[in-house]
Image (cartoon, rainbow, N blue to C red):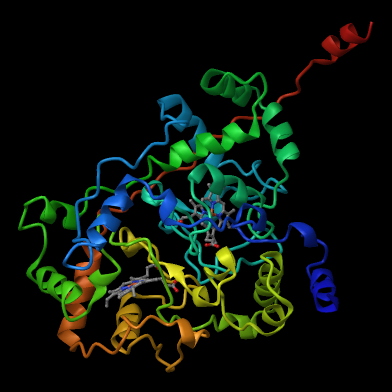
Length: 415
Ligand code: HEC
Ligand code: HEC
């Protein structure tokens, strides 16, 4: 505990110890079996997993992500969600919004190895893009929450992310007449209810999708949609490279968890603030004493059920939109697709021959591939076919605060 308290002091009190946790807050972490909550998209992928080929083929992405029955889309709800996504008043010190770490001009993510954190902190994981996040049956690198409605509050409240408090955020919304009007129209709220803010944000996120990409056009029958190089790359992807074993189905992800050998973040050795976040995350997620003191690598999915066989495992990410979302992997270990492909080609080792901090759980599917330079170039060109044009969005003009009563009205009420 002593180490913990010291670390807390180092944070100059900007973040309280009790609430310090990631975008993924400890309280929101669920250990439920994952397959029980799969949505339609990935159910298809999983069903195909069991087929004779062993995995689902790549597929065209459906036009829209699945919409939960208890949070239907409407234009007004999506418009409200967009304002809230960009509004820093849904955070601790009203300086950081969802869009601060999921910046449309940075691939709807944050273009550094670790995400920026709440002011005064750094995050401990790479910021994921919210592009196509509605198609995922679970959120986060370790897949620890099962809906966007549940993800949003853990982001807004997590100590190194939004670090907000429900009552304060709700009070701020109440002081913005435009929000009172919109929450009333969309949800029938007299005063904006924070739960409905998360539902509106989730509805907005379900509209941030990219469905028009070269691979979709190709799979739909337009054989000219891929270049010759990309078609050769597809053969590597599905053959010698073995990528299809995990990156399959419509999202180019099987939604399973693997330890592919990504080495621990070098930054933890040099950056004190990053090391502090790492230790606190270990603590906040309930590590045992030994893990808390000695872990040098991110335990990943381990926290879901505290099972040793989950150490260092992360969800297979979609390859869609990755042209815009560098750096890659849960800790941003690689800045380019060249580095990623070199890493796989070496069997899960980086340029310094480092590999995972959890060697016992490293996937047997990751082994040296023996790809030639031409095959590597083809493969990279093919990965680029999972991205269409960049999707940008300007920050909307946010509604202003206004006092709820005029001085006259107050005087009147006091009479
Ligand atoms: C301080 C930076 C930061 C802020 C603020 C932030 N996020 Fe995140 N977000 C991240 C990081 C980092 C991750 C990955 C965390 C992890 O896996 O542990 C993430 C993950 C996500 C994911 C999961 C995507 C996937 O592929 O599973 C979604 C969705 C998301 N954030 C939405 C939001 C929303 C909505 C808000 C605002 C309420 C928000 N984020 C605020 C940094 C941030
Ligand atoms: C055993 C399953 C598996 C295989 C095989 C596999 N991957 Fe992955 N891939 C993953 C997982 C899991 C991650 C995330 C790992 C992490 O962050 O620690 C990942 C991450 C990536 C990323 C980074 C995506 C991002 O958003 O950060 C790219 C790009 C990628 N893989 C491409 C490939 C290519 C190309 C191949 C074939 C040479 C391949 N993968 C083979 C499971 C696999």
